[in-house]
Length: 148
Image (cartoon, rainbow, N blue to C red):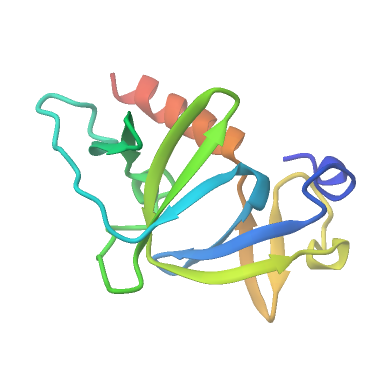
């Protein structure tokens, strides 16, 4: 993600902070469509291993992606704090499970000590990774192409 666009564009540094196992992740709020607590997932036989299944949301069928596998954060254990984030990139919509929502925060330039486009940030003494929906889709495509 281009940090100068992140701070000067419509994002204004506002993110949803969440945990994916032990990893602290920040998703720009404009990329977030919805947060779901519970849903019924249909397993699709023969689907790509990165696809947990599909579910219906207001008449649309959406894929539920194993983002924790893509980001190599280990297996995800569902708890009462687990949620499903629905994101959109251009016309594409998908969802993934997370461990815990930490809240909505406004990240500022000082949260990015090296101010590179790597997206690494510091927040309340903890290191995290800024990931936008475009990066998520690029990672999904890359992993699916590698495993085909």
